[in-house]
Image (cartoon, rainbow, N blue to C red; front, side, top):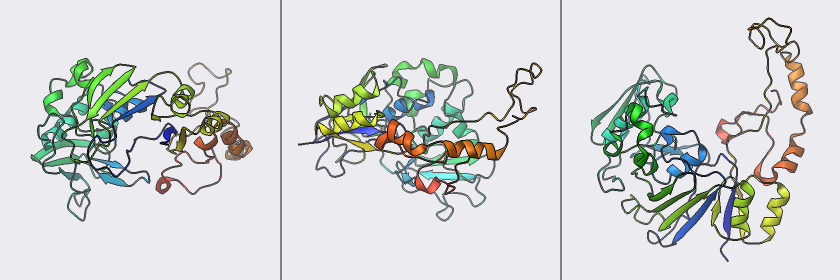
Length: 362
């Protein structure tokens, strides 16, 4: 019996098909359900994780991250470093080398001009780009030749892997989006809802806030992938109904972000039709303290401002006491089950980025 999968955790950013397949599309159709429906397939015009995740089936960045937080080359021959000359010695530029022969799903070549255009698209102040902060330190992006894109920064960068790294900043096809610069960006409905990409799938149908339909990209760079010939993402409802559609009725193969009570998880698992997979990410449920004084006795305009620190909460020992009074283990057990874990840090994962400071200080 084939077990289906329900994913616990809102921060998981990718679905990976089984690794070894003899030919593209050999496993037929895969059906996915999201508690929140997909609204758009252009990550530059949304901050929604559901939208970025769905778009990732179709459009890709130059590089991304694995589950341990390590950078992984996607559309480039290797990750740039100072040692291989990809990052300038003064840390003011990074050069990306595209894999030769890459094709868009429409069969046309992927070039460095597409990379430069993507930067132009997001950096246009009239475009309302949701990812503009990732381009804020960039002075220019130029196509040195068809396979070479050079990013020049406004000054030395300790981390040049921001733009074009990760699902929020994928490469857009210049030919498809060149009429969508600036104020025209949100008006390009066909482009935003059906981007031409380099990913394993291409869009065949999209009903906004409902269903995304896809088929295997015939020009995908790995001839053995994707394993599935078709993929459908159905959205809407809630986390529990999504989980039931996989774990009990078997209507879907995979559910994303099924954060449901532990007793419900146990009951669904007992049905034997699927399994919950925990994907811990960087989203943290937390209490934030107001370090300013909100007293109504303060003059108008000065209440809750830095001019007047809070008389109690600015004491670090008070905040430490409050933090230590929270029974994190019980909260996880009662509210999250396998889908959560107690933490004292704002960035708990991946492990390489998690602080080893275990003093629960807010």
